[in-house]
Amino acid sequence: MAGYLTTHVLDTARGRPAEGLKIELFKIDGETRTHLKTLHTNDDGRTDEQILPADRFEIGTYELVFHAGAYLDASGVAPEAPRFLDVIPLRFGMSEASHYHVPLLLSPFGYQTYRGS
Image 1 (cartoon, rainbow, N blue to C red):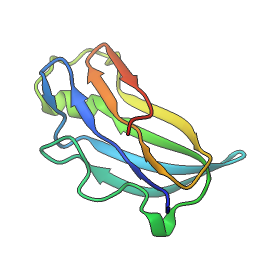
Image 2 (image 1 turned 90 degrees about the horizontal axis):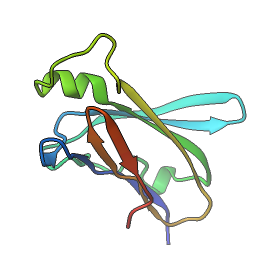
Image 3 (image 1 turned 135 degrees about the vertical axis):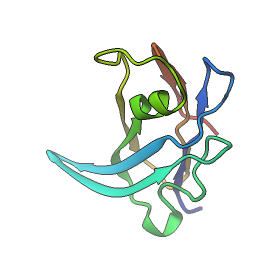
Image 4 (image 1 turned 45 degrees about the vertical axis):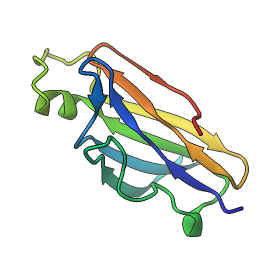
């Protein structure tokens, strides 16, 4: 089985998928952080393609960066100065060739993530 990476972002405050949220993927190697891809969520809160497809999958440490502040601004949540949640970095390891699903449950004042299926 080849490994790959996906996500799903849900806006728990509004009770719907988080559409149009910018996500960046980085590969972490020691102190080196390499940008691999930038995507945006669709109307279902998912990306239209795998974040890291099987043909680019490598075991290692990665970081997904969710641009929550810009999404919250665009969705009409009253801005704060500074916003409590702006950029959410999630650093995680992928230790085997398998499907890694890293969802984000988001509200203006909190978030949750886990390894999904």
